Length: 523
Image 1 (cartoon, rainbow, N blue to C red):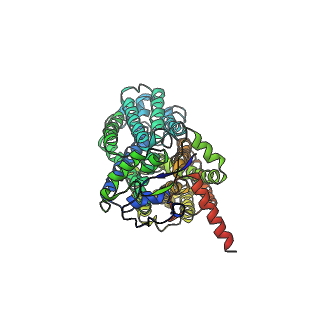
Image 2: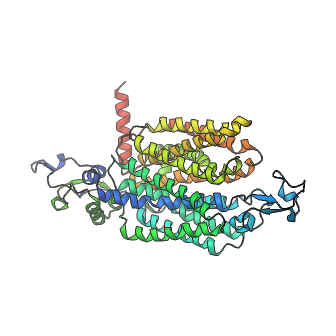
Image 3: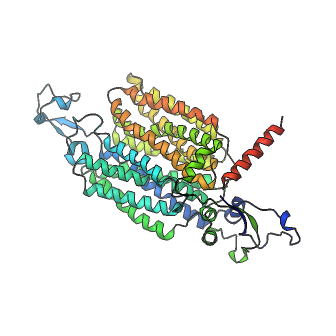
């Protein structure tokens, strides 16, 4: 990591005296320099943030599409007067001519490929393969956005390949094994979408708006999730492949829009030494309050530190720095617990005595108030306290879903919704929290690892849901204990509300040393 002083960017009306000795001039940080240009939120920044955040819409569709395509279809008895066949019978013990599916067999992979009597892990294999692909993809793609490709190119590549993989599901899925393999590749490329979209949108605006802009992505994710039950209901008598078709084609067209209209992060461009491109980007997204003709690119100097990182050097940096490793470990544990509930709850709706379409719709709708709550309150919320409160609330409500009895059965869907809402809020806060905890040169990598931990919870979710069909505590009980215990690790993290974003590890360490000196000085 090299340290050098370069003329970079200033406004013509900076008012700094020319008589000031060079060594006494103030050398602003990269954050303050960019803030002077894009601090006032304008339409160019808003349009860029919205366009980038739309990627979350397609991310949500591919994440939760298995709730419908891999669902257990309903069936009915075909022979009147057959006492051995009733609604609680095990169809695996019934003659094949005594029962039939309510809808055509190709509406679900289970009925099309006759998996109703397969081992319990087989129906959950595609969903687990998808999340396993997300884990592997996160490891492979995690640092590309910080090192060689940048935020925009990784977002474009991930969204395009995810959509193409989803389209292949329609064409090349003769059995569950090939279907699961394609789901693995779909998850592999999907892994970087949320990370890049969140980091890129937050780096295109000033620090005053980064929390609100980050929540725009959560809104888009909620809308994508909400679109699934509507699409599934309209295609409820059609093949499960139609859902993949209608969700993949728009994603391909969106990738084309990203290529032509989305700008790269100016922070990433500066840190990687591409100053001319960074300045061009700043000119294009700066608010109308700044007249670019008055900018003097050689009048201001500051100490620029570059992060010439290769593919995995950022991960090495995160592990070697004790403060970074401690933060990353705590964030990952919290994210794992939240991910287990966040990805597992929608899959577990089939275990409740409630309509699947309505249940998924209510879960998708509960993401909207979670995003709204985060949007309006992120500037006021203390990150640590918020995570502690919502993880405990989610855990308690999830465990209460296990309780038996007529009254508790009626309350199950309400408790499930509160638990899911709380987990959504935790996911929103922990992702924004991670952005604030790490500097620019490793931010995307740290975000990727946090998302990896979220997805790891998703890998275990389908397995617990499959076991939970026989033992409710193995599903909702484990969900509750996991998120409640993992949330306690928030106590190990520093509070970041209102803090400025750092760009290099040295800058973050300097801030830590300054805070430590101030704390010691009080005693």
